[in-house]
Image (tube, rainbow, N blue to C red; front, side, top):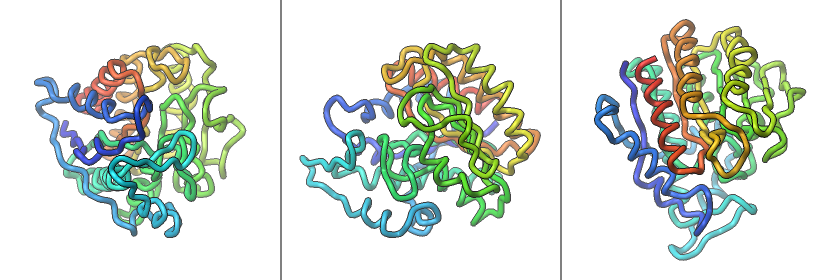
Length: 309
């Protein structure tokens, strides 16, 4: 099974400051975990820069222009909110993260590979059409979904999100469009305070909250009993995964008790649905995960399943 890994050294230059949880060491940990003999068969490519056309399928032009116009001096930073901070390298890193998502869609839709994983930062699932938040600048998963539709003619795209935090940005981008399905498991209550089961969009949104302390069995049940059947019923032509690993028991930012084996199990289930419905096409994007060892082990479990499921 050919799997393509996208990353770029520019994603290490996004520096939100000392002690910020969304640090460059996160990406270094993931890349080290994938730089072993076990993953020698991974195809690898550099993330390109996203274009304005690709970004503005989701974000208003004035928003894109404003974000890209923030270029602090090397020793300075600009805080967009209490959590979301830009340094001199942030604009390029965000363009590479969005560009990786687009390039991954191109690769799977052209049948060059069946799956792709984008090890990039900053993450994207909290970015709303006109607002950055939660460490996120551009809504990478939504950008990927819309690119698949606009360029490759994929009529129906599913975005599934297992980050511990609700993907409010992706939901905001997609909730009025019945051709995009968005489903999320996440801790409730937790940041950003959205993701209630009653949030249904136009019937294309499914939120399955998990209580603090929920373990891998509860996580698997939420997906097996609710999200995976709905995903299969939607019958997408492409599945985009917001792969956040901060539901892990060791993560410091929330209180779920998921383990790396649970992420591997879920990835395999998603891939099997993709094999049945859409030629195996899965594009996965790195979102959260803030304990470095847990993040590395979980990402390895995820990519292992992408390769072998």
